[in-house]
Image 1 (cartoon, rainbow, N blue to C red):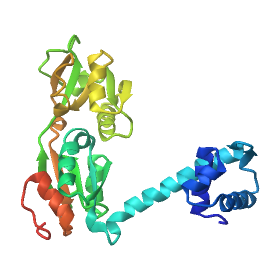
Image 2: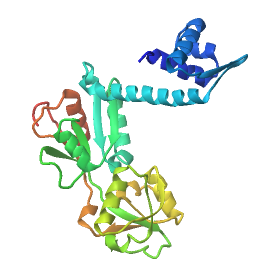
Image 3: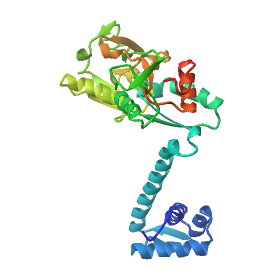
Image 4: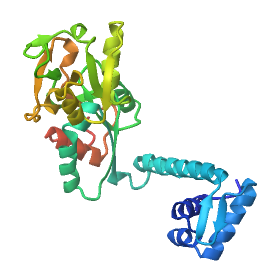
Length: 300
């Protein structure tokens, strides 16, 4: 490769500023040096990337392509650096935590906010994954700690109680199901659904449960948060399956909560760690904080 990261950062800055001098300032280069680097980049790629004009520059079609890929390349490198933090010399200041949808959208924001206030130098890397994926990652040593829904999981993980919760059905207060005490899942799969976006753990979980009945959910709307789910249901867009504690504060909405009569509706949240590996001191401190237990490194 005949160009480097400085060239890519410079090109992005110039393209976003539509000005060579301003772009050069953002990456701490002299305009003459920046101009030379851009010309070399064009020579190496054998195509013109910028159209020089009296008041600035504009991108050619080739320049648009390079800009798109340059941004992706730098973002990928930044993500790589972030994921490498737990394995670097500064790992004691970084915690990588995977959690399911319920934990991330309900309890973790407050708990982690308080934990980070007590540890201002800690950097948290939080990712959303399904419970099975989290448990497998913990068992393989890819991460030290995760938060999952209680269920049959990888036998190599140890579980600590975190929060009690359950999945419930919410419907508009005037829906024909409103007022029912409980319902089986196969009785509701044909109703229009509101659900979190594809890729969320609860989206995958719900779709899998429907597939086990040889059914396809009628998804009428996909949104980004449980608050949005509740508001869409209240507006009669559809019904939804959500954690009970995600709707308990939605008193102003016209919703009816119905228990789901399935063994899998009980979704107590558990913290999982590897049975055979010693936890680092910072992860142990996080485990102690989230479980309110006195857990020492090396005792698991």
